[in-house]
Amino acid sequence: MDWAKTKNIFIMLFFLLNVFLSIILIYTLNGNNITKDTIDDARQALAERGVAIICNIPDFNGSVGTLTYHDAGFDKKKVIENLLGDKKSSENLARLPNIKYEDKELSFPDQYSFVFRDGSPERTLHDLNSAENVLNLVSNMLKGTGVPVTDYHLDTVEEEGNLKTYVFKQKYKGFWIHENHITVGLSDKGIAYLEVRYRKINGIINSKKIMPVYQVLIHHHDSIRNITITRIDLGFKEHKMEDGSRELDDIPVWRIEYKNQGKKQNKFFKAYDGTEIE
Image: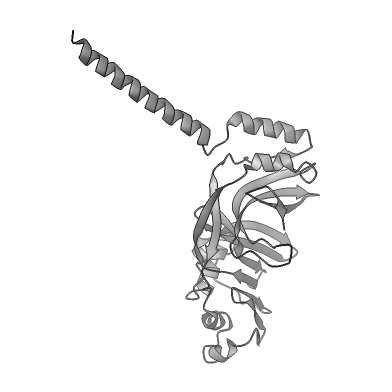
């Protein structure tokens, strides 16, 4: 037997084994997921506080950056043409912040949003019994305006009297973008109210470690108490500073949707340190 050759083979095998074990150790220490036992322990601790959680607790434990935007929004002139049906006057009307045209009103609170009210909505041939069909109708109404309606997804539905309100929010790389939203007020005749906010997304930069949501829930022992949590997700939101100004980039936030006296409400927490924000 060639002992020198055998010795070299064993040395190589031990080297490869050490590399393999090192990779496993690094993965374990830096993994982006929390263990099931940890999540179960958190559920139990919260249950003792009267917190019922009827949804999944995300086990994400990685890093997320801040969301940056372009200055671009939508084509204001095209919005006026599509919603008011006045192509001849759209250029002059685009200079106005508030427009009244017959039974319709259109206002532009800022360069990234508009609100449309229709006093006499026309009946539509569209079947509006599903959120998908409602969004398809909105997509037709906003065709050519630059608003990427197909990037918006159903967030909530509420009914009050004869008005059914759908809220759609944009999703980007799997994250909810809470500031970019489409709110549709649907009467028995058609769309009576439409509010749109859209600012073009640039990307996500400066990734940083976030606080796992189970830690956020445990930490807020005063405000997270005697409630039923129905949804937890990770997204981006504007953050108002103490002086009233807003940060230029949207920050990652954990959204906690819960029921309070039968009504759904939301709490938002900064994902970096768990601080509650508006």
